[in-house]
Length: 399
Image (tube, rainbow, N blue to C red; front, side):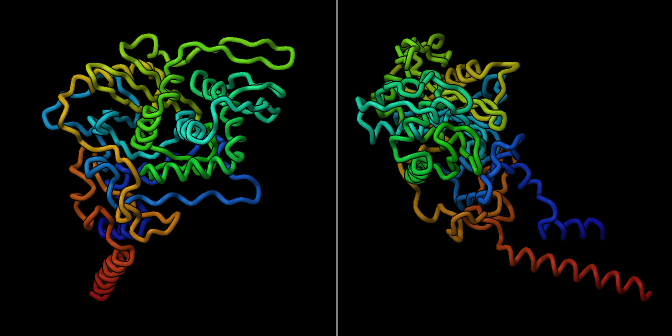
């Protein structure tokens, strides 16, 4: 009876199932370790985002463990990042992945969305005057000062080379302000089909409700690789940056290590916060193929993030083309990919899939498209179980 009772508690939501535990980050990132995501006074914490009924990019993109082509060798040793993905930027084929739709914090890799908005909307020669608010941004900064004069191109350079949060703030000012920029970032994510992504800041600094996935960042990175200006800046090793006031101009260097060490490297973007841990994007070209690698929630030890990226790129180039495990979509998937009720902020139950399970759509106990049985049915089943327990107990007492 204890086993049955525990089963009833699970049905009622008192304890997650093994499948839900395996896929726990399909709904939201892990809890924050600090107060960086605390909402401003008078505002509420954003509701968790809905989970698509069908995994974007194909059924296998819903798996929670390693996702490899049939007969492919095991991935290289030393890849400790919680979630990763390798894709062909040209065809959009996903070559291999691990938990690609796990929701984690993107840190500064989210700047790709800010860069895309700025590149598409702002003249590169527009002059932007730096403000004290730009200079006061937390974290990494390129060195903007109040009264300094910077072109949009120079701000994008600072964004890519040294992950300048001050540059992100200055660009956001030109895009209508921080709030308007964040709204545009989320609109762009929705258009791209990046349904795991919710921006909270233009820079990737943690904020309430921040979320992304390796799959989503690959979508944004593929867009960056289609903009010649952004490809040029991402691959720039050093650049002059203006001074301000009595401070003279100075040289900034690209912080992406693979740009100088990996053959065919095109550049990428790194990120780190205490909550996100390390994130990294890189692209490289070899033999007419241009590959993307995305790593999320990694650590620098025992194998550095740049070395993990290099090993996965080598692995991707060694895989025979023509055997994708998924696809980077070109736009928002059809409406039936959204959560069953379509309500903003509604939570679909976590897709159930164990490590290397076939797909969300084939998991036992799930309906078509991978949705869990309706809540009302679970509750009904639980009530029936509890009623049965009550009858057994009653009969036991009257013997």
